[in-house]
Length: 256
Image 1 (cartoon, rainbow, N blue to C red):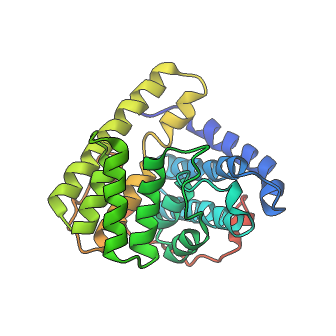
Image 2: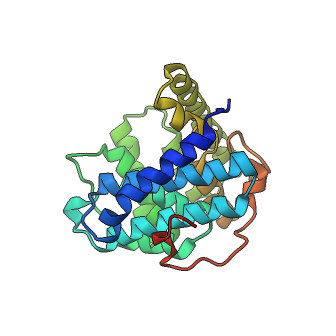
Image 3: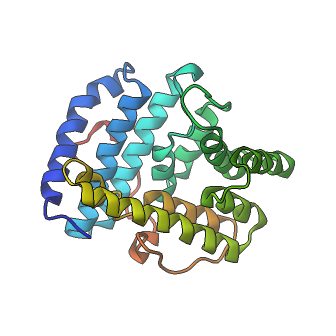
């Protein structure tokens, strides 16, 4: 499913980002506002890809999202952070700005913010940060997974299955769990299109290209796990690396 309104969605994203930019650069934005800003960059990345096939621009805007969120994390107290709201973390991994992803992991809150997030959501993101960017020992990672199983009370959660497969370097389990996760995302996208209106903007962008899924494939490959050449919502052309060098402060130029 695609939308004929992608040019309008891209323009809306630019205008919303321009409105939020002074708050983000000035350090006065809340995490919710920074995540909105990063979402505008992610949507523009996907629009550039779907409208023009520009993989380099796709990577560039994901890089800007990751760097903008890192700016927030470095300037904020832990009380203002919610680790599970990690979309820009996945943006950084997806565009292979691994330095940014590592610094996000170091700057993120390391404890569960129980007022505003589910523990299993926290554990999923914290595991990925710890396993891939913080050199956590296997005992710590195993304990996280055990706690996640306890919290979910044995319910099937493809995110936890993905983490377990990554730790075990098990290609078959990873493939099955990622497929389950993408199936859930497809169901959500269909529901969003059916609802129409503002929901179609998400369905037509994040619902067509799964940046988090791409990031998970990158992490699997970094651990030597053999993955499929292509998955639903993760086209093979995205698996190439960036075509240009990034600079750490170019996220402030959203007109580029």
